[in-house]
Image (cartoon, rainbow, N blue to C red; front, side):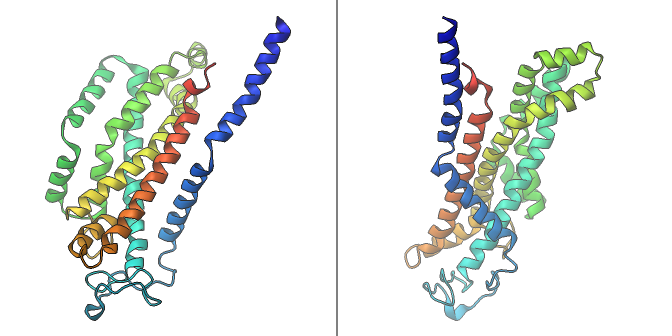
Length: 291
């Protein structure tokens, strides 16, 4: 019987790496490749051989694909490829900056609420429920219209809207970890609350937060695109995928690529972040490894 149990255990352990390897299939690596491509293009946009995304040529409006303009020009004669590349920079700045705000504030509040419990937890959860009661897009529209259009305002608004979601993820992870043996042992040895939170809980809470961070980036990119599409995103003439889609809808009958190209770029980027984030979430979820 012991031999059978040992053989079964070895078979399960040997199957785990193979199962994990299958999860990181070609679709995952294709998503990683697209993300790397977008990051490289956005970071090195200034040194790439691209024309200015704001220079207009009214005599060359809605030009087709050519050697001079690889993806043609938009309704104002601006190079479409250059605007796509610079629009990727804006989407990534907002898409990464807003979740950083959310994960920093929301993660800290969630860990404190899950660790200390009591009235503090009730206050934090109640505050997040109040924030969640407002329709996010309507709230973002109202605040953006009041504060004005800028990349900083847009990033801060979307970051504040992401705090409740990150708080819930951090609180759920902390509630599970706070009853684990290593935390109880640290408390028995007289470790301070700050040491337990920073040394024992934070490294373990960061794993689910990182996975959720990537999913949050995808959501923020869509939200930024929606606000820019409605004219309340980044101010013109700054290129943004959402504003490009909004401008391109006026030319759908004569130049549909002006709306479809930024839409495809946004779709592939959001899909890539979702695929990578969901895969990392599955790999870091302790329930996936339970036998």
